[in-house]
Amino acid sequence: MTTAHDVMHPGCERLRINENLTDAARRMAELNVDALPVCGQDGRLKGIITDRDIVVKCIAKGKNPTEVKAGDLIEEAHVWWIDADADIDEVLHQMAEHKIRRLPVLENKELVGIISQAELATELLELVEAISSTSQ
Image 1 (cartoon, rainbow, N blue to C red):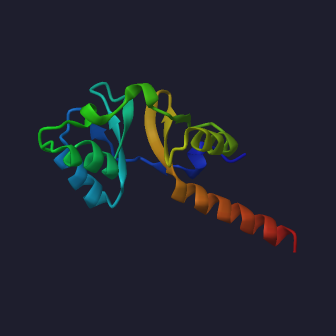
Image 2 (tube, rainbow, N blue to C red; image 1 turned 180 degrees about the horizontal axis):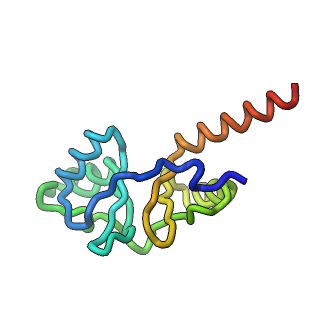
Image 3 (cartoon, rainbow, N blue to C red; image 1 turned 60 degrees about the horizontal axis):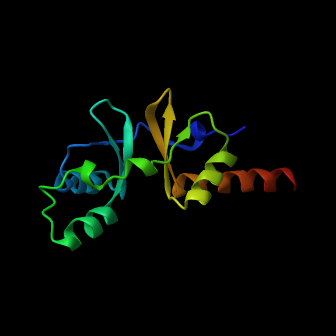
């Protein structure tokens, strides 16, 4: 059984809830990613911020990204995540049902990784190749 832990990008970087959006954008650029999880002072997942969130919810509204904090953009009520032991079918179901491109992975309530569409595509390609090679 393939689990969320098997396909996640481990040890993902995260933003602090009080980090400003200029620093958040700079970190995304340095890491070459388009989104980062946001964690509170307690280290617990609070949400995810994308580069698009910064543009649409801050810059396009004329706000100064140096003054806006990561916590100002997240919607804690809508934090989707998956347990590290969850089956890949549940990962696919959650992402499809909630129409999300990234899914944080938690283990014992701690953020341990993130699954993106890219990780899923790679995993599915390997699965198809494995099936093809056994049927020949």
